[in-house]
Image (cartoon, rainbow, N blue to C red; front, side, top):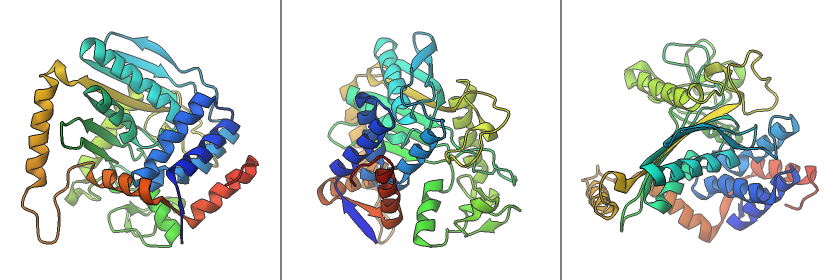
Length: 357
């Protein structure tokens, strides 16, 4: 059974939790906005369902509520940001702002981040660029849960990529996707609903296809986008690897199997190769290529033509970002459904900090 809560209620409760963890008012407000934006856009796996996980990481001493987030290396168009073990929900907006400032100055900005934590949905950070007539990009490495094609061992995270592109009269183009067939949060939702996973999402510890959503607990692994070699999993593997290298090898964060797990009960790898999790952000000023108005008018034409493509029977051709935008509109009006197990988690968090939920 789902419980319905308003966006403002969930955001305010989340803000209070971050304040009780020791975050500043500014950081708590930012973190809550980023986190609950996932629920608003229908990405329930990355919203308030993750809040108790952040609390447990903080209790384990792996999240610094008062980080000294800073640039540790830069050129006119690039930077490396050290997140000082802060919430990724706070570190990422700082880094994206640096990328946009550099883009404003020299046309494009590229920022790699180390020493961070889980940053919520990638799309939130990429979309910040839309407000300034810029194209935004965001990606992050994550807990190693994914086996490369032909491997049994978990080496990569779900490693999402998001790209946001402004338009004129049309809504913006916003692609936000994991480089696995499904994100781990989707498995967590299936676990809460006691439902089987589709074929192609996961494999067991011996590398055989499985539909058991609990397979990761028994040594199994998520699969790269495509599921198997015949369906192009080697391409998903390549995409996940690119994200890992841009986010972590480039910045000095932990990469591959050394990336720290999101769950606090798993130990950190004993032989780290870097600091924390890594992210990568990009911002490109549209008028560094052609006049922004001209570009956005052509984006309208691109979007309109693709949206009007002849659909297969019973289907509708969508533009990346359409489902999330429609979901956001509906949930702002009707409220956000939260699964009963997540409500139970949130009430336990409320009890932990003597808050009312």
